[in-house]
Image (cartoon, rainbow, N blue to C red; front, side, top):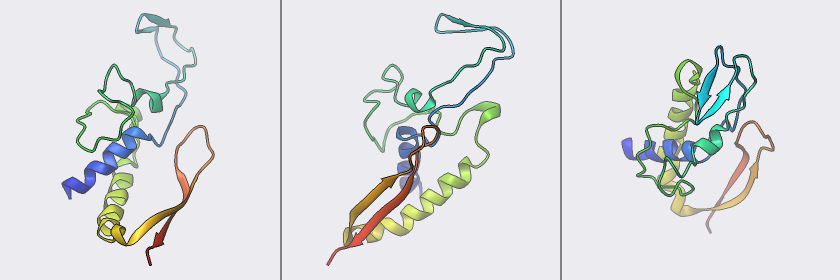
Length: 130
């Protein structure tokens, strides 16, 4: 199961389900030399953070072996997604069932859900090889 869970984690790092969100700091903070006053609306771009070349070597590549303890596909701390473990489990079980069959299929039509806030697919067609 461990080997199959790696693609799930790495793919959510590379294509974060949530691309950005809005927050208001409760007190004045400074991030990377920029002062953000309390109550100011900010928009962290977590999809971009997971591809930060200052944090990750070859940040835009899908690397199943990448050790990445600081990624943000499901948030962090008090704002961590309550459904993250379920989403990862569903993806892992799907891969466990699909991987043995994939040599018999080819990728067909793939349709991305058009949404700026979140990243996902409405259709991923697998066509059985003849």
